[in-house]
Length: 466
Image (cartoon, one colour):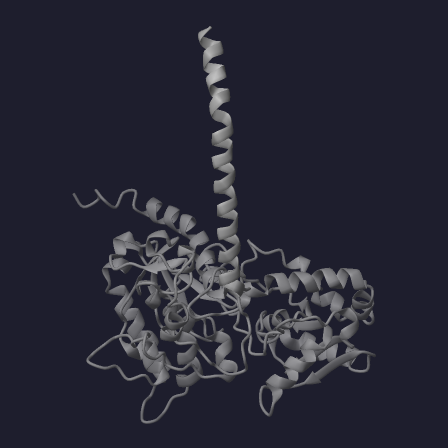
């Protein structure tokens, strides 16, 4: 009886409750309708709010100032991941406060009030354009470290600066060695040695006197030597360090090797092909090369290929430089070509590969000793064609291979190039998985092996002097 009484009482209350619920629902619906009408287009997501990354860069250096980035992002932040959070950074970096003569002083920046670093919120020293840009990674990584601790820095960060070296994964040496070589490798009388050589000697004296160096023997130090001739005078003395290089062409394997060191991309100097819809049929040139033809060392292949290909139909193989509109011409040539040759020159690598990637022109790599950036992460065979030098110089071999690649196969590689090009774009502030952060990631992947060597070297150190 009690159960039946509870059931009948529920039946008595059901109608008024249902009526009340219906009225509330109807009122909510009208209010939502009027809300939508009042907000209009403000509720529409833009491509920027969905995290789109711009990869467009010009021929000259036009850096956004960090202050501008702050201004652009001064509105409400919907995603905390859009900011640099030092607490969530993956790599902890201790950076020496080297005197300005080693870094921004080489850009003619004059310190104020005995400061070591420029006020990057106010003004970033300009970096020289032209071919100087291709080896400018030292500039981008140093800026990234400096900005990593600025409150509310726009964009996520992979590496963060720490002030105590005991908390660091690596010790970063901010010497602009490529710029030093490019600008100051000539001896200027009455000096008997070049400024570049003097700076290298000073750097070695500084490093070997530091507690951090003595503790690790330099194994956890990161030195940027991207130009093949940078750090030429002292690289044998700094061999325990982790070098960041363009290739291993001028290093003995006991000084630099793929086990301990990092290969970083060149910064491309031609314009990125933005909104590229130029597919297979829209690119009239089959195979393209423009550059220095007569090179020493491994570059002898260029000469042989020139005589084999210069009269081939749909092939442009010609001499070119960055002078007299050369960069614009190369950009137009690559943008209108299906395949772009990347041939070994004086060293195994060249900036031409990264110009081709930015142009979505499928690279044809003829360089047996080349090492490629991020190859433990990227499968280059999905967007590049590799040819052994000994095969490439066989009459008819290369053209038969290239002409045998179908439109469908080429299109797959072209689409892949557009997918991965962001890994090779340099930005400031750095963006997620751009070239700056990819280099830091490559460094981070070397840390476990480096730390293993350090720990093994410390086995008997603690107690040996007791």
